[in-house]
Length: 233
Image 1 (tube, rainbow, N blue to C red):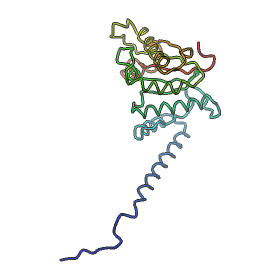
Image 2 (image 1 turned 90 degrees about the vertical axis):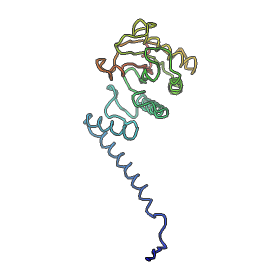
Image 3 (image 1 turned 180 degrees about the vertical axis):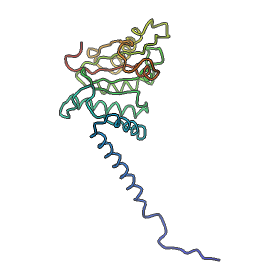
Image 4 (image 1 turned 30 degrees about the vertical axis):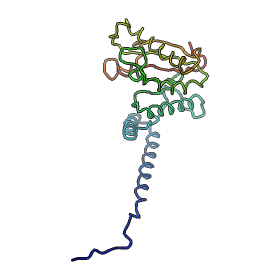
């Protein structure tokens, strides 16, 4: 019989720290690749990279360039507020595992726009909020409530006429969705009603092409526009 040799030094591996070290190096590599991508002017390449990182790590990557032509000035309180709201909405999306296209934030010449998908808020062809939408709108109210600016709540649809006979056209459906959102923000969450404006735009302010299924899905939404002073008209 061959005796098994016993090595006194055997036991848990003393090189396990290499696993943690390798993970740290990988994260640093991703970080520096992001910085490198941001520094390049090739928007198409950055968009492909951004999509890959978002799908792999479920994080939001800040796109280069100026959103909607707004100057990205770190010293501008408006831009910094946009970044803060964008980070808060991203946290809400991750908290409830909503999917990356359920809520987006955009900076425009009018103000800061929070895009909320209709699938997140309403059943198809309805203007009554889903019960699951209440928790999301409660978090949104906590974000916009402390701000001193008026908020225009806009209902938007695709170009397909409503199947529900309760709504004769998309004007009515989009307006009623805006009103339902405002009533919840005001009556339940306590956002001052004098700061809220309800508007229905039907299919006439699309974000994407209504000729495609994906475009129509993106166009069905409720937008909360945090208006700059003097933009409440």
